[in-house]
Image: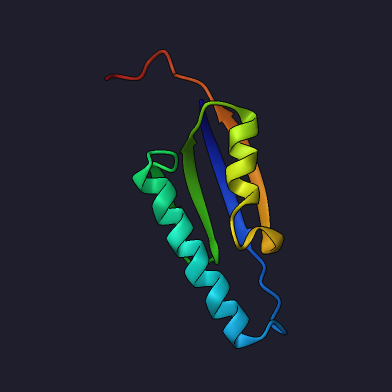
Length: 92
């Protein structure tokens, strides 16, 4: 199942700098792991925003939820999910 996911990062300015750096490093490592596993095949920065558009390729809604909620930055993310379906005009 493919899902389009928008993530807007909302880290509080009051968060300790070392805590922030640790969170961001763990987030990057986890995101790269999911990309290598093929679960997160597309990751795009939104220019001018601390946000991204992503495509996830997972087995179920529950798997997507588990992957997203395991993101180290999850408590600081506003997430919007859209299920994707194959378009009949798409050329392979």
